[in-house]
Image (cartoon, rainbow, N blue to C red; front, side, top):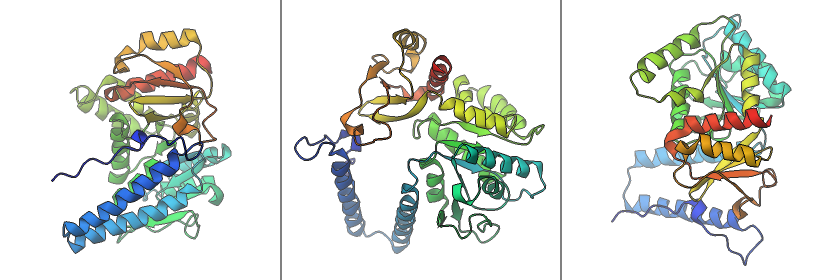
Length: 344
């Protein structure tokens, strides 16, 4: 017998008789019950000890990481990626220090892999108070840098897949400095997650010292080998930005959040939370210019849904909703660019 798909959280209906905003407690109980049932099924399936160890360790370290990050859930955060091998006198290291400093001046927290090189540079710039680390256990090369090593905002994980989840789950932007396989892996994975709608949109900036050709060569590869072969769509190029300097990267991140605030799915609609209301004229333009991203219906204003009423940080924001065709995430980014430009 095939296990039924778990009920999506957004399909759980609020109970009007329990509390003003009962969705959170209802959904929480549902998923805890699902977790317990899944554990019971593992026993019924006679899962091997090796598989049980992997699952248990992954859940335990994710539980701890969730607990750590929950205290900073409503703080803006950026993940910074780059090589652990970059020496302190390298221009890219110095650029990462400058970038961390600029983000800290805006009171953003800087999340890195907690290692040396670019990761340490970004933490030096941000300072201990605004640094967070997601370290990985390796037999070589990876120990926590001096900024974050003994900080309570450091978590050390066994598995790359749990670490990568924390890099993208809790942050509002991502910056990529020159690096090796790991940096390229993180960049392509985040691009894939956003392109396929598995992660909501966020600014992704590729940064290096002024005059560097690292990201220019990377973009040439993407255009020649991926775009020209029609392995990606032209609008996918809007998902990342090649910054000319750390200051340019900062500007791109804050342009993204000029009007756009955040988004979430409620049932079959994508809800965009905005910092400013959209006029009738601009709403008409969006519907005329972006019909290709709709899976029926039109873009329209909506009130705050009951599911969102318990979030004091967003419930007051104006909203747009649309039935979004997830094959067109690059075009959705273009729509957000229009909102930011027209309402700024």
